[in-house]
Image 1 (cartoon, rainbow, N blue to C red):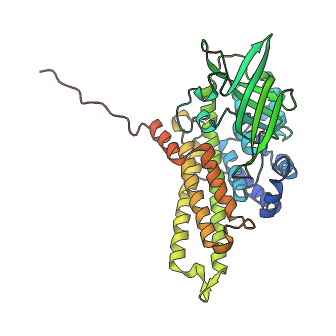
Image 2 (tube, rainbow, N blue to C red):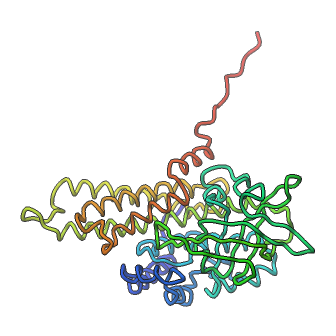
Length: 400
């Protein structure tokens, strides 16, 4: 493994940091999350036009940049530093890879170029609160999260050659503003029960989307109601390995989330260090006290360890034998929670106020753990995959 970044990767990082620093400060973030879309459309257009960010991991034949998971993770890290609200994760890390992996050539040609240019955003709609399970991050993805009966999940029915969906999905990231929904639905009844993915376009009859109040406003969520909605099957066959595709995409998505959390933790630590150098108590800067130094040193070590884990996961993404995105995510979420907690504490009386941004980092850590964790289950799943606690079996007996 070569841990050094290429010149192109460093250029992506530098350019993106300059753009985000200039156009996405704390005040801009708070303003953007209060817009109907939940993000700054002008910033999103700049990210698409100047860097090709929505299509950074898509093949060039579909209008993408042709990079890989490492570049997508680096982009996530820089956006995470500012907690920049954008549809990048929902579009480029969840929905677009599923279209590329399972879609027909016609579907790829029609959708991926529009996604790559930033003109079409997309979201993955999973029934209930089973996003982490659907992505294979906290347990085996057996498809049972999609709802096996009419009372649960989203149901799909083929009638006169047209697929129609009915049901409801909660916690759909950027689901209120996405132009395309990739909906996981249950079909086949009890005889041929299976989970498939369907494409639902914006504005179709029977589609009701409501933005929800969420703990982390910088990662907006929506409730999606499907009332006999006309949909298009993703792919050509109705026996595709959807759980397998979701699990593969989930590992890369976890890597991007881990990089985002590392960027956020690093920035929270930077802001805290800057503050303790200026804030004086008993005639000296509080950063000169040994207890404060030790606390921040511990945070620094934890953030650097999480960064190493995230970078390794980005390097290994796509390898079936090296699915470590969930483990990197657990490490990064722990680091972000610690960095944000120390930021709130060491900023004293202003750290928990709405006017200061320290609380936003704590909310990001808590929200991501609720959506994609918890941390102990992410680690348990990683241990299960590595067979750390699998019995080796009894010693063979020798016949006498």
